[in-house]
Image 1: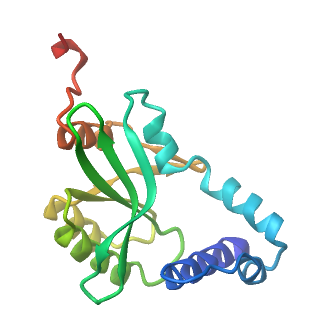
Image 2: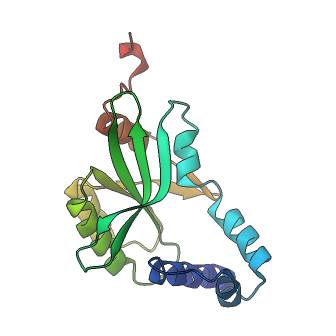
Amino acid sequence: MEWVERLNQSMNYIEEHLTGDIDYEQLGRIACCSTHHYQRMFSYMAGIALAEYIRGWGEGLAVEEEKYIGWRFIGTPRKLDIVIMNPQNCRSMAIEAKLQETSGSAFEKLSYALDDCMAAPIPSIIVFSGRYIRDDMKAKLISSGHGIEVGYENGAIADRYELLKQRIYIELGMNYFPFLRP
């Protein structure tokens, strides 16, 4: 499990350097491998990206990744993981994606992410998963109306009840229920 810890350390490096340049060679050094192998390992560990998962619905949604939208409450630039827009009515929403598979500072990061979502200029949610997210934090996220817990199995998102898809359809003014479609 040492490689998972190193991958999480590299993710911490990325989060710390979001406003500047990210040195891919440094990411490889953190993970104790070459830049090429780091990129392959990251893709393998992450499986399908959340943005690709949403694009796979085939609804013609515009999906942008890593979109800057103003400033965080602590004075640093605010970047959203994913911004989705329905081109038919121009409604948009944002998604923060958080995975915590090792022990660490998830409580602090998720608290900041929740504050950011509540202050975002467009509707925002936090999609989260991981066995090391404490139950009290899960309850706080879900009860705020900004958190949706999904499964994460074999490197892919597992949204068994399609709660994420339902929430996105509702926020974007789309009809989720096929039997209600004209």
